[in-house]
Length: 173
Length: 226
Image (cartoon, rainbow over all chains, first blue to last red; front, side, top):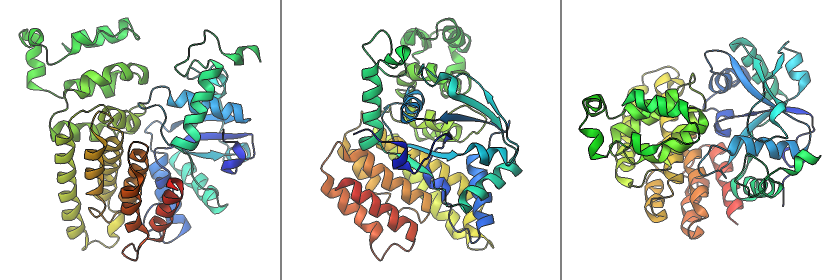
């Protein structure tokens, strides 16, 4: 069965950011919230350019498209997919502006990708706010979730998957 | 050699002629340009991480992985995998290790990392905040990529992968290493009998495990296997 956004505690619309490991959200030996926020932000937001990739997700279908897009170049494709999610309000609070930047092979979500500039100090505040409100990193699990999503996307004809279809159903939507 | 690889990549993104960059071919070793490759066997690893796009990496992986025959090459891969200025380097490193067909260099890398881990832990006792030391953070990153790469290395028998991952259960006291080992067990669970995996995971929920996060993490993994 396909997962839904509510399975991950998500009330859309949100911005999704892929992370390398959900373990990074729970660093070792941090005694205070501030210490944890600092450690998490250094791990998750460490680009020297301060530019980060976010996907706007407003429906379950958009979530499937993002998973397909970000799995397209992996081997194997069906892996655990760890991510955090952020609301528009949480970005606005820090005056973080999103900039549309078309990305990936899934036609449905290609234009739902944004670049954002997040300074190290803003990243630390953002992580503090997210942890403080009880937000946890999520995992779209390989077997019960990622695999059915990729199969479903392939049946639709999604260009980000290995599909036999010439066109994707999403082009008719 | 380097120039020809770059030209091939940029000319036809989806039609990379892998035979031109195959380092093992006898013809390629006879050209003078290839002396650069002989001097630096990790040249292609750098090409993979620095110059190839995520799409191009997919096609380069198999050719490059076949040449990862030493623990030095593995460490080079782990090092690149941690570079925040390279796009998707972490995933690219795991995916490259996943194409390896020989357990030996991976085993050697595990042994070397375990020794480094023990040495750091001993020396780190003198620091005020021992577990936040930058050296440990770097070591965690190496462990993560290596363990995930081993779990995904589908050309190596699942028995060999299981044995190597099992040897890691007590190799480090680091939280991130333990959670990655648990993830690795789940990754290979699809290809093998889950009972030995459950047995291995039970260690993380026993009284031997002092970290409540890891106990909870392992419990969730056991539920996933049920």
